[in-house]
Amino acid sequence: MPHTLSRRRVLQTLGATATASGLIGTVSGRGRSSTARFSAFNVRDLTTEQVQTTGDEQATAAARVIQEVRPDVLVVNELTNNLQEGTATDRPNVDAFVDNYLSVPQREGLQGIDYPYTLQPDSNTGVLPETDYDFNKDGTAGERPGDAYGFGFYPGQYAFAILSRYPIERDGIRSFQEFNWADMPDSRIPLAGDDDVQTEPSDAMYLTEDEADVYRLSSKTHIDVPVEIDGTTVHGLFAHPTPPVFDGVNNFNGRWNADEIRFFADYVAGAEYIYDDSGVAGGLDDDASYVLLGDMNAGPEADRPLDPATTYLLENDDFDTRRLPTSPGGAQRGNPEATATFGGGSQVDWVLPSPELSLRASSVVWPGSDASKRGLGEDVRTASDHRLVWADVATR
Image (tube, rainbow, N blue to C red; front, top):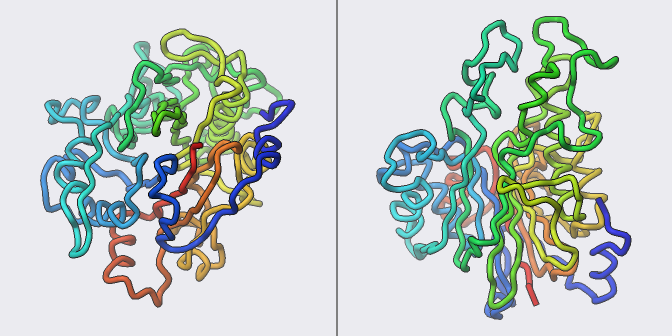
């Protein structure tokens, strides 16, 4: 939640450069050593079989889109963690994607990108507790996908990977995969016995007291990955909260999504209740710079009663949201800030810097129907139902 002296207030005092909008956008200022491009791209269930070999249509299209933008720090959502899956374990999928696709020019006039620093954190998707629980209340305990900590038909499905052209400060990484949802003060857990929680009909999702004792907050993982950009440390905050749908009368996934988004809002505000997977307590230091990246599965939606994107992102002074990325393709669908095709054009993917960082430019890669850039619109559609989002951030 916001600090007493918010980072937004600091930014306004220092004076910030206004954001520019466009399809791919200008690279003005990127020649300066202190400016980096941060990007988030949900590639829609990119599997081990696709990236460990060459020639896959979806992986090729996704790599082309990424090569057009050339991010310095990138999160790829929904890239299977093959080390958890137990397949092709000699090379992580993130490195296979770099070797087989990103490092190889995908169109004439494009250049390959080498990402020397990569990370594929463990995900809660498809991971079952040591004791069998019937989390989804279908009458059978200990079965994927519904009884896993995060929805997945196998461990590591729908995971995400982080790629960087700048060094990752590995000693400073903090992961929160095992943080217990019940340990969040005033959590929204739909708990059996609460006045507003129904245990009928059969699709009513809720947790018992015993289940709440083990249930993890993160449907994938929340992770803080510090990156050194020309002598300045910027914390990349990565997550992929559960979609707020498919959950019955108790709005289970809607509540879960809201608290997953709340977690990083609390984290940047220095909340003391937080602990990481190493047992270290507390949130982010007050003077730290950061960028929140990923598919948050939430936008300012009037039909979502909890609306966490508005509460924890758009109206939170700890994130710079004065001007958000836009695209011609989204504008043609009636929402210039849309980042995904479903829902008629939904704003669910985010790249949000801390307000003392200078936001130089940003965009969503979604060409309009009249775009002339050869084949980009087709590759955007082939790659995913989401669109790549990027922002140029000056770190000093």
